[in-house]
Structure formats: structure tokens, C-alpha cells
Amino acid sequence: MNSKAFAILVGVIMVLSGFASFVMMGGNQDEAVIVPSDRDSLQTFGVQGRLVDWNFEGLQDVLEMSPESTVMAYWINLSASQNLTDAATAALPQSLGLNYASQLYSTKIEGLAGVDFNGTRMEFHRIMPYRVGYNSLVIPYQGYMMIPGGNDYVTVLGKPVLFGTQDSVRQVIDVIDGGLSSQNFTLIDDEQADLQLAALGSGGSGMPLSGGYNEFFLSVTAAESQDEGFYLNARYLRPQTSVVSKVREIAAKNNLSYSTKASDIEISGLVARESMQNVLMALLGP
Image 1: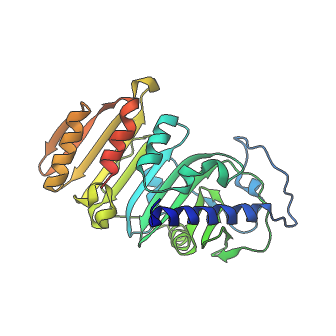
Image 2: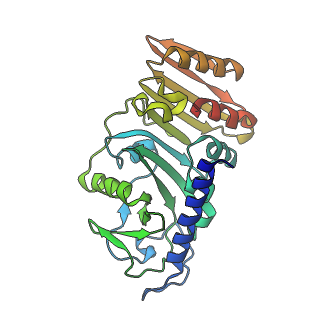
Image 3: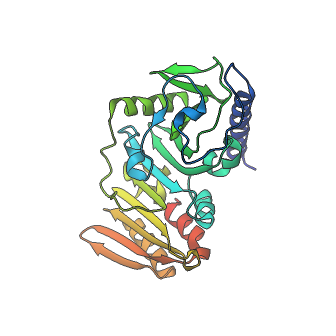
């Protein structure tokens, strides 16, 4: 294990142990576990202060909560397909929600998003509300209660739950309070998909295919029968020559259609379920 991977592992352990310590601490609130149902309101959490209450049905909703400096964002419906979830876990940037979903909360994460901005990264988690052991050891900000989770990570409960460093969560709360949104992305449409990702080439080498384009948008939707695979569409605005060659190679290898329009390119088609992880890793890798 290299030093970077070890540092990530240590950070994960610190975050998870810190979060576990918090939820085990009791206050004067009723800490009995509540079985979630579709009728549960956000108040089921039992916390004081404001709760996040925002639409969380796709990438556009995520960007409406993200600072204008956002250079990459993704959204995934974790209830759509375990095969897609596994492929996304392998291909997307490191995510506590994807890698440790069953350990973070008392109920499963049904939808998840991640955003990169200002040199930091944070996550949004959609969960069913459940009773949280609550006491005064929180950090209030704009009326929201930031729950410490170790290693400077905090959680703000609601729909969705905000999870990240104090600085990143504060920036998102500022956006939510001010109703601002990211204006940098142009390829995102209203079409629903199980996985959506957008990236700007201005984000640099940390972006998919090292950011060799002006903008990139990916959508993946499970076919009606998951055995059939997944419908994939990927679009690039003004890609560099190296990206064009790479994308054309991916399309040819996986029997996807490849098209050009002016200086832009697009690939689309049905990806076999057994090929989904390799295709995602190729499209989202360096």
C-alpha cells in the first residue's frame, strides 16, 4: 500500500470512528431507533436548528446547491442497479458514501452526489430520516447544525445530508441560503438518468481524461431489463486530439456509436452489464 492510499485509509478510519462516537453520544432527545417510512418528515431526525430541504432527483439539483467554482459533479441513484453502483464505486473519485455506505448512518443511502470546488470535495447523501442522538457538541452555522465527525469532517442533516469538511459545507450552505447556482455547465439536460457526471476542462488533470476538453457530460441509465445492460451517452465540447483518439477507441471497443458536430464529439449506445465498470473507468480515468 503506497503512502497516499494509506493516508486515505487512515482518514477514512478517523472520519468513521468520529461519526460513530457522535451518534452514540446521547443528549436529552429520544434516541430510540425509528423505522423509516415514506411518510417520515425531516423532523424525524430530532435535531435542533434548520434542516436541509432541497430537491435531489438529478445532477441539476446538485449544481443548484454547489458553488460557482464547481469543476466536477456527479449524481447516482444507488437504488437503480447494484451493478452500476459497483462500477461507479470503482470508477468515480474516492467517496465515503460509496465505499462505506452501510456504516455512516442507521439507514441506507439511496442517492449520492459528489462535487469538486475550490480545491475541496464534498458529498450529498439521500437517506430516510432516523432519530439521531443529539447534544450540544455541534457547530452552528446560519442556523444549521454541523455535527463533527473527526478529521474536520462534519454532517448537516436533511434532504439531502451534507457531508464534508467544515469549509466545504459552509460554502454549500451559503449557496443554499442565497439561492445561487453554478453557471459553468451547459451540457446538462432535464433527462433523468441513474448516473450523471459533468466536468470542466478548467479543473485540470484531476478531471476525467485529464480535462482535455472544455466540458464533458456523461449519463448512464439502466435498461428496462438490467441483464440487457445500460444506455450510455457521453458528450465532449472542444476535446483535444488525445481525448478524441481515446473516446473513439472506447466507442469502437464497446460497439458504441461515435459522432461529431463541429468541434464536439459524442458516443452513445448500449453497454453490456459485464462491461460497465471497464467503460466507466476508461471514460473517467486520466
